[in-house]
Image (cartoon, rainbow, N blue to C red):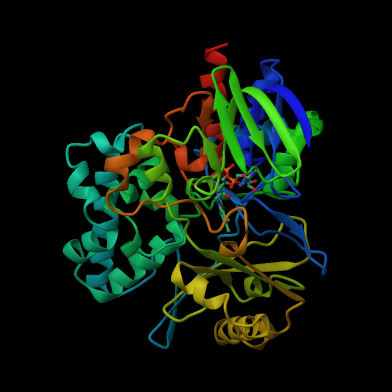
Length: 450
Ligand SMILES: Cc1cc2nc3c(=O)[nH]c(=O)nc-3n(C[C@H](O)[C@H](O)[C@H](O)COP(=O)(O)OP(=O)(O)OC[C@H]3O[C@@H](n4cnc5c(N)ncnc54)[C@H](O)[C@@H]3O)c2cc1C
């Protein structure tokens, strides 16, 4: 087994790991990044398809208040462009198709008021949750004892508003409202400004796309220290003693003074620790399940729906096409329509044969855009629950009782081991920007003690 010595070893080469590496590089420290996959990016994965179109199979959008990632985009002269948001959106409900503009579908006035009040209440409540310690809010225990679904049942009155709200929740969390603690939901909304920002294109989390993809941007940042990134080394064990830490993969052993782990909590739970993790931290890792999401890309010769006056955005009550976006690349001839399948629907859908998945999606799209939707160049989907080193996405969600009992251990270092990853972020938790914040923070913790 090869043994290497360094000052800091970083586990994971996603946005969190590369952010930590960048900070240590700038500070002139020696470090090594160890990554399980054969590529950098983690939950970010830009792929060129057989037809020639490029798609982001993982994270793709950035929002206006995600300052860390904007800084990297500017620094690397990476072009960004607005996600297409012009024309009529489609609402397909109870076998009827209507069109609308903006984020909220045109529905009957009572349901619309119900939905509007619910979003406004969440926006107001979430602002009161302290981002550094949600568990200290005076009503933390009350909020953490119920799911977001329970809150909806108590505070929303119409079936349609609840259904639409839940589609929004699935799009944001990749999980159903019944799977998430209300405290976590409020924290998450505050972390990303508010619920409206999380579900919106304009001024929201889906506003901007990165030319060349989100993995391309990360590769540019990592280029100066590429030789310090060791790919194909899943870490199996982390051992610590008085003087430092040793991490081991099957073929590699790295001895360092400090370690930053960016492995998501659910997967960190599979690593062997010596000495073992403190009991509260270990129990936290048992309780942060990843959401489930599939991105299904339909590539056409052109974004033909635009000529028909459509934005490419659909919200429907029928599966599999629940929510769609026009993700056509700037300066590209291809038309790229992205269909999201989320939560338990993703787990069900991926179990069907690929040909059936494609057929079902196309048949539904034909119902909205006509026969032109049949003329697809390529279909590509990916379910992140199948990825060995993610096992889900977009991030780990907190069920009831987790934040109040275990939240304080999220960022707490253990001896020489520091914890990063988007799940530990205060701002934009669950997003690339949050991953960067966490990487910078963990690197700072180490630099402060040098
Ligand atoms: C389908 C999808 C859509 C998304 N959409 C968006 C979006 O539009 N905008 C946005 O901002 N965010 C989005 N996200 C979320 C975003 O991708 C994540 O928040 C962010 O990339 C997390 O970065 P990270 O570095 O914290 O974690 P990761 O990217 O998961 O990095 C952790 C790294 O650790 C590695 N690893 C795991 N186990 C081991 C081990 N044992 N040994 C060594 N290495 C290991 C992994 O391979 C991985 O590279 C999306 C995610 C997905 C999957």
